[in-house]
Length: 408
Image (cartoon, rainbow, N blue to C red; front, side, top):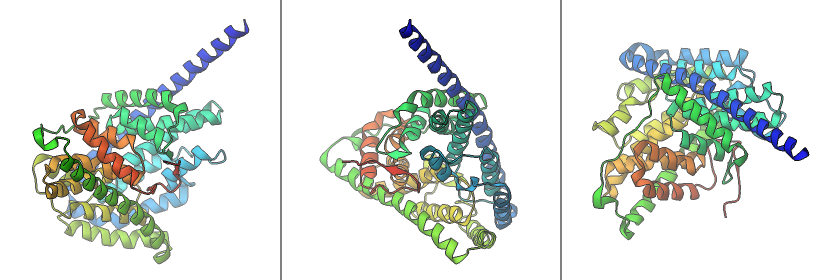
């Protein structure tokens, strides 16, 4: 009889966790769908009215800083607060982070702030997961649902549930997977992807054409891939180190956060408009369209996108780092691959994942996202390049509170 009660309790607990994980995914998918769709509308509107909107960037920056200063309650820490709540039982995540992060990112994109969206989606999901866990008054479940929520947020915006689960499980402690959150993360990611699809969010898919003999695994080809992987690793680390450096230096040079965001925002607005009329503003549709639709890709696109994103985030504008990393990697790979006799689109696909993996110190998610976006027929290439970039990055990451397990 005692055994029956134990099994019945376990079944009920599993059903409860499954139902709550589904709720986290549904809520994350719905909110991230609205967030993502709104962001696309804002970017299209800004691109059509750049001469009027980009000059507003410093004023919009002031609004963002004021709102966070008055009502943020620590929410401005963003992903660092998510990491802190996962590791520290004493840290909490205020639900206000959701509307603040969404509104601040929308405002920044109106003025052309060169920031992303996926990091914000992960924050949204993490907050929803933490809130659901708190409602059942179980701190352990709250920490489990933080990871499930991150998977839901990622999948809700990009509709790549496998990559979402991988990222959520490995990003907290690189080199170690949070297996206890595996099933909740799978349920949350799957339900979030399904719900966001109902809202009209589409999965980005740009399959590579048949490369024929250009992608044959020969020793010269492997050598070329290795050099490319090291370059992608360096690009990701440049982003991570420069982001940390600029964030620290700006606080020293311009300690007043209002002056900082206004002065830097004014300089950025001028440079964003001068640099190919907003090519590097917001989600940078001009660059991605040029890469995958046969437009002009400049050799300096990747470094300018990198610099604009780093400066925007360091100045106080809110937004994600992941989408810019995808763009930086694709643009860099597109111009670097032909130097080694490789197809530019193959280089763009490899850079898309490897730069992201190097900067975030993750391995499985970059491989999965590259396969989901560019097709799984070249998974051996994606795996090799992402693995080399990951293992050569020195355990450095854009996430200050990320922990690292011993790799060897």
